[in-house]
Length: 116
Image (cartoon, rainbow, N blue to C red; front, side, top):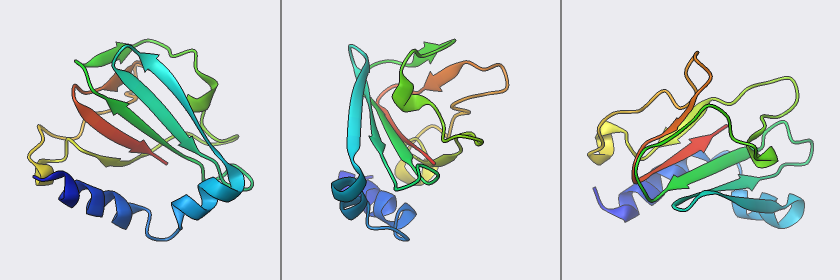
């Protein structure tokens, strides 16, 4: 499915908020996770509704832990998967369990994942 369709899907996931406005007011920060993956965190006023977009341009990224503070969930909560480019609606292989019960991070090859 074309990138434009995926962009529309991400926009609809975040339709309840103007993320560019939030990023301007409360900030956005990024970090390199590997040679082919990075994360962008969109901050909100009290951090309770922060979002993290992880983009992996390489092969599957498996980690037992990631020493990156930007991936820490908001206080008193955990991340949930809000959107993934691997959704079959976009021709992907299925939505992975990004943080399964085993505690190992998994970001599929050539994908983008939005955590909320």
